[in-house]
Image (cartoon, helix red, strand yellow):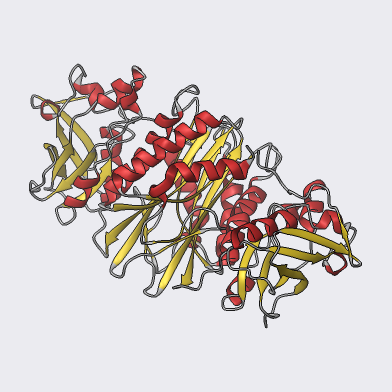
Length: 290
Length: 290
């Protein structure tokens, strides 16, 4: 197969995932053309996964497709956005058709599940890497930022912590099959004063929120919703959870599981209290990209 | 520098390129947030350049940044769109700060020149590759497609052919400093029945237009606007020109240099006439990605 035949095959697999009323021009032209309804803004995010660094080089294509979509959709969740359009890029050493087809199936599965249309992409020969640029719709002015936390706010986290990290160590498919908190992100609009998704680790990501907001935080270690078999110290420093970490004046009335884990304070820096005593946490900077 | 310091440095260099009134949230949060004015559509395209395949591994960062922006802006030109927002991704083996800073300067130069805001991006460790997703605005319904060519239309090309290829062979900076036909693309709205930019080679790209439109074409070799020192047969098969190739009922009234090079016919396939006689052209499929 040449490039154009491969693209045709990928487009076939993406099938209905590529089409929606708001997709005016889908894959196959110089660019896709999409519409944004009046009164809405567009959130845009991109993330690249490199073989041998972000996933094992022998990882199945479908799982890599799922993770590439999942990490980007999680960023949209952290903005409070509803997934709308994605462009997907693949760099691969050979025209390994079964792998590419599996990758397209993974992309299509997540696209359908979360309501995102795959509107275009790129394929190139080179070291294995995948990249997704995801777009999400937001009612004008309702985006969630990292910078709105204020002293006195409560700190919350969704779900449990540490399972993503354990799945990474075990090379479990759940490492790839991220469940981005898309519904929660949208529910948090109007409640959260600041939000971020946990990709680098809770302490590191809370650090981003605190720096962007010019505040600090005090966390209660025993309050952490830790996944079974995970130490609390690991749970708050390991990455890969893709839960939402957010601050709010009061407990939001939402359908998803959330846990209050601390409070925002004026003094900069993050203090972790274990039964009332401040403890030092190693590896507090989370996943480092460089 | 760690990842976050590198991103801060890149964001500093991008400076004003990152800001525009329609950029509601720029780099630094989980996603950027942009607005699309009422009555406009958004064109979205992405292209990845891999070191050792699309550019030499020792190419200067600024030139790689220019080319990464240029190839994507050229796709926007072929849609008739006006550049608005870009996200830029870099995968690099080491934190080579001077190279990364030069790359950011190249990105910023093109962003400023063509009015595109850099709203976000990604940096990861891995084999050198760059990827840009470019967004352009279009008045609703006015996008140019590959699929509108009709028998009886004239075929036109902008500028001259072959210079990009010669620059590639000579490793001349002009290979990187693409001049996407942004103004022409917008002028062609309402004139062109189909349009594409020449990246794979004139014959290959005209083939895309013909297939998408269900037509054929007859070209006049001696009419080709060939760059100095290039053979006409090379000029119509080599890639990298980033000129616009388009069809129209009549000669458009535009400011940019354009040349009529043939006509659209009902029968499928492309015939090249040299002084009235059909000739066979080798390498007629242009640049192959696989």
